[in-house]
Amino acid sequence: MINFEYLNPTKVFFGKDTESKTGEILKSEGAKKVLLHYGSGSVKETKLLDRIIKSLKENNIEYVEFGGVQANPTLGFVKKGIEICKSEGIDFILAVGGGSVIDSAKGISMGVKYNGDIWDFFVYKAVPLEALPAGAVLTIAAAGSETSNACILTNEENMQKYSINHDVQRLRFAIMNPELTYTLPAYQTACGVVDILSHVIERYFTSVDHVDLTDRLCEATMKTVIKTGPIALREPNNYDARAELMLAGSLAHNGVLSTGRINDFGSHAIGHVLSAKYNIAHGATLAIVLPAWMKFVYKHDVARFVRFACKVWNVKNDNADDERTVLDGISQMEAFFKSVGMPTRLSDAGIKEDEINDLAKLCFKRADTIGKFAELKEAEVIKILRLAAQNV
Image (cartoon, rainbow, N blue to C red; front, side, top):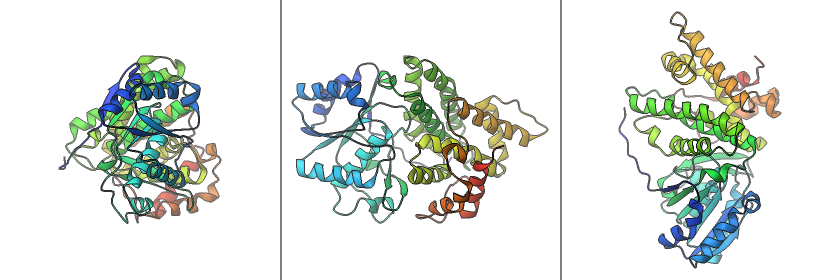
């Protein structure tokens, strides 16, 4: 286990009807004029926005609405939000939605406090030192952005999608009512399931030894998602399944599972390129990339992949053939992705094999290598994407 520092100041309000306390919570944070930030309309259709506005008014909190966040939030949209905050004298940002809305809110919160171009943070030209306070009412179990220090934005001008991790952008609070996820389309629920699993997998595959506790926490989180994800798809109003997924989403990305470890996140870097170029949902890109990544890198640490197969996917250990055990585990994971309606090949998402070389190049606009468990260069990413194109 390596040395680590851990900070997570985000206060979580979890459970039924917690969104009704939004105004009260904001008042306790000293908010007086809030940017009410949300997506494309579902929060209006479900009347969630009405309930939140009612709570704001009851607590004498002014607000300015800024809706329209799309999946894979863009830099240009965030810049509009920054200008609104500055011109309106906003002192707090409230994100109502999922990871895309929260990431957009985080980008705005950092940009308000920075005199330069916020993209400077994403290309490592500057480091954010402060941010406007922000909170969230979560409506999807997936990204874990509600309790993470991560923010992901897409620069639509050059099709670059990058993430940054800084504690200044952690939210003050996250309101998490599993009931708010009941109305999600099955596809979004499934994307969330894969997203949660991927966040754990990126931490689980580490080169650091003697991390037994977090190994077991990772395995328990993954097994919970594998069990409850299909239940939520079959029974959308199953509170218990939705609650397990929502809690797992936060635990997967709030930093606890990273303690003492070195994370990989090479698959995420490849997935971000697919999202940026084709506007594919993040979870769907990871369902395509992760099996291919595993098939390419498993020989880097066969024993860890054997453990993954046996502990997470209940594969019977073939002691005479470790490779068979590993490949069975990858096959089980791939079958699970398919069972929840996710693509597992580039062709499933309409991506042609002759685009692979160009896609690989896009992975290295910011760094010479990606991934930590197995460092990847352009040639390796090409091989991974070719595996993702195979129909076997």
